[in-house]
Image 1 (tube, rainbow, N blue to C red):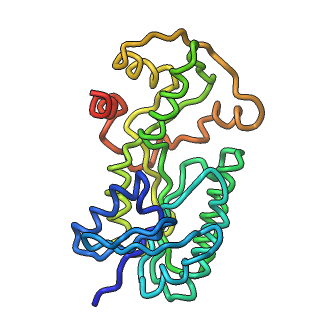
Image 2: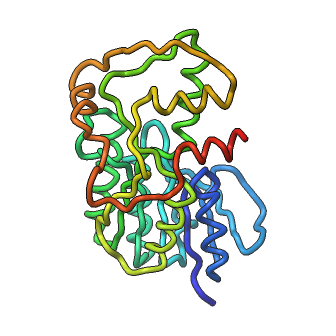
Length: 253
């Protein structure tokens, strides 16, 4: 019997695209989930928590490939270390990890946690692959929706985003997972770079709303990093094809 591919974060936005692709390729999939779920359609669920370590050893047992997609606002570094320890003991042969463009350049706490997660994977002794991706369209939409609820739409000066479609990132991750360990691979970004005003305009148009735009300043080192484009990869990246405008039309209709 072939060993299952363990996916952490398999019930999230990215995992929701990755898991069906892995199943379509003929692989059994095991998902580490914080909530109990019954097995279905060739997918097994193991209850566990990467922050406490509960259930993680059972999740990695018998898996030769682990795809680490789980992430949150904090604690990603500790979660990665917990997973790495269990995977090393279980004899995992390929650890695939999703990170974020700018993890090594933008001085924010959650970016530092992402970088520490990368280091935990790279220093684990397990053959590994890490893909850094730009902000997903889905998360960009959540941000724009929240800002559009304000009477004035804030536009941070110097902030540019290169949003990428999560379905395209999922397809790339599956390709990497089914291939051999590759280390740090080229980043994956969207087809266009936008400032926040350019992201907001098509959203507001589709929603039939108007908002005045108010330039604001991002202070400190983070502001300087964004002005310098530290969160972007303008050359050498794998580039998705689905644009922000197309995503909005599909999502908002």
